[in-house]
Length: 193
Image 1 (cartoon, one colour):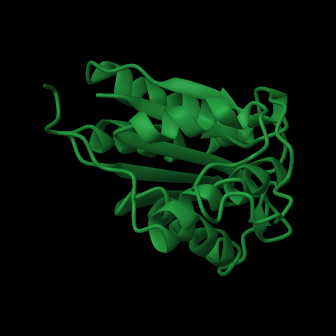
Image 2 (cartoon, rainbow, N blue to C red):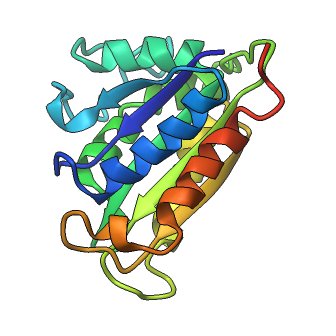
């Protein structure tokens, strides 16, 4: 089974990365490995809305997204991890999602969705926010849902942790690490083939 993680945090060793690490530990303890893409360290051009992918489903720009496109196509499980800034996914995360317009064109215009392998395609959304406001995750959840469906991930689970702002605060959260570990195990549960 191929599992990828798209890390959208600009803060090295920050709360989002720590949460993702606990998720990865759950996946690894289940017998699988995870390929992590650190979006902040990658050379990714924002979508230019040029229409270049409309007729082919292939982006005309060649940068580090090429690696992500290939990984998404081959993945059985996709983890998307982002901090929440101003009630939204990070710029790094959103830029990668916007560049997946090519998958949207391929699926909805060309009627050629990414095909699932023998394990199907599932996703996991991890979000971390500093504030504790009931609606702070809503718009990001919707954005992630459209992203997942565009890349033919038909179902995904979500783990949202609020009230963790300063670096490392998530380590003091009473359940975050355990919940992330369990989410990782659940993502690959029953798929040890």
